[in-house]
Image (cartoon, rainbow, N blue to C red; front, side, top):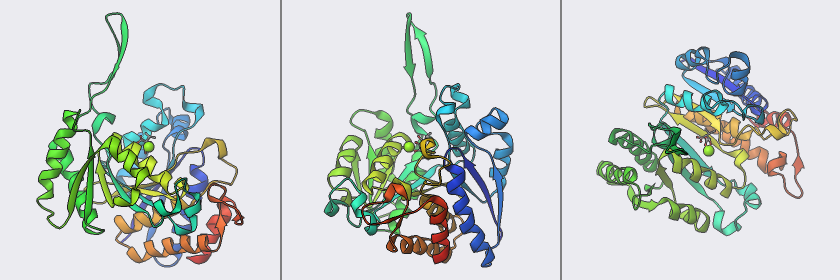
Length: 355
Ligand code: IPM
Ligand code: MG
């Protein structure tokens, strides 16, 4: 089976971190995996080259690929652009265009990095949560939306909307993920105020009938935000809508103290996927060879696992990353007292040496 992978490095630190992940893919290729890579533009670099954050050529490339590896998009240079040309729009466009509705965001605490968490070690030790975030619906895409004048005053508005079909399909993904883990799923909503999320709760409850082996609970989003810092280990899999998932996944990633370590997958219903680090384009440190490439490298592991069913290769990468950490090698973001601080490329070298 040929694995056709589109590489969209994007902006800021994107090209540097993706370069290290590509070295990992090249190494797997030398070991016999049938991998082809093609590069394309997304985000600010695409705006610079074509005027659009998600050009048609990139869409065609992404459509033909089996999987996509993305670095990061955005930067201060683009902040003043009209909304349709903002780099973030490129990311939203590719998610929508490819129907990548299921966003898997693991928050795992690597024992070697426990000191990097802002929470006490006993609260976060061995933390391993999976957030399943719906990614192509909700207030992110709901219409009508806009800013307009009403009675001489500006008003801004968006629409929070979910159909039952959209809720069903993400619920199935979440229940199936829970079946492969501790069989416990917490669905997060705001049903005490928002009708849209009352429907969410009702539909998740209905879908749960297909998964009697999974224990389903529900939690309001404000409480979930609190519980995540109070006692995060009560969670195994969390499923929630696009906006709540955006917020809670940032919170969960910070519990691990190392947002630079966390990969993510955005899947369609055939496990075609876009894989990217959870962190952003970090324009302040771009081009300085100090960014942490591990989240991007671990995104390749997720790609091999979810899109290509290559569990062995996925574990090879994950084990190589663990060995590098055990060896005491750290990029600046995860460095603490007594560790050897290394740059982006040297971190890539270290992972390759353990692969
Ligand atoms: C994320 C990001 C994006 C989102 C932005 C960049 C559009 O925050 O992937 O979490 O809100 O989905
Ligand atoms: Mg976000």
